[in-house]
Image (cartoon, rainbow, N blue to C red; front, side, top):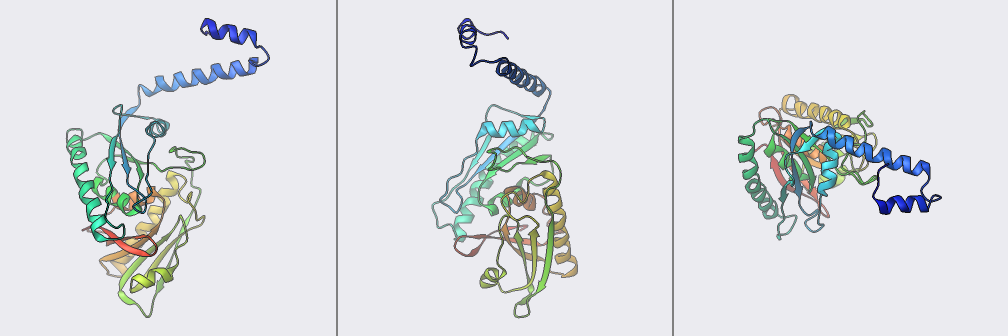
Length: 298
């Protein structure tokens, strides 16, 4: 193993510290790192888009760019440039007010203008999305980018600290309960999503005179409820089935969504929304009680 004179002497001097096993492992790790860099020369390029917006309006969020690049390389792609497209959005208005969300949507549209111009001249360019933001805003980003091009969505894993998808196979399943609320307005539909946490239906009834509830449950509720891209696919299939039933069987053109979901699921709800096929979605958020934040499909 070729080293500089200084480190050759250190290793030869402290032979107990630098065992054959340790040196062999160091050599293998370095070879693996070089091989990854060489492989990456042939990877397809993807534009990294980072969305950052304070959670609940006051908890700052930050995406580590190096971690984003590592996650992208794990799906055999590489960034188009040495820096990402950063969408950093915030407002000083009260978080639960309509004005706050109007501010965010205006800023998001303005920031995406440059992205759209770039994409117009690069129709085959792929995108990689790394969002740390309130769930309704992530869904809106998905809607604005749409499904007209290849987009890879990533989400932060807490343990280990990474953006790399930890599994490829299905690790969870999802089921839906449909309920008629006799005292509610039968023309009003709520989609409750208990994936990251359990949402009480009574809390929804306090803010929305719901007549029909579709409640999606994860078999394993928690922050890792969507742990693989296959989990995301299974969730989407279940959610799409609900949208079809609301529009075609219930003959209702809009639904209110109460989500406790991972960011990947939020992005897909917006990205795959089809205005003529799916109901219009009024997305709620929770800040000491649910409130209507924004609309998908207007």
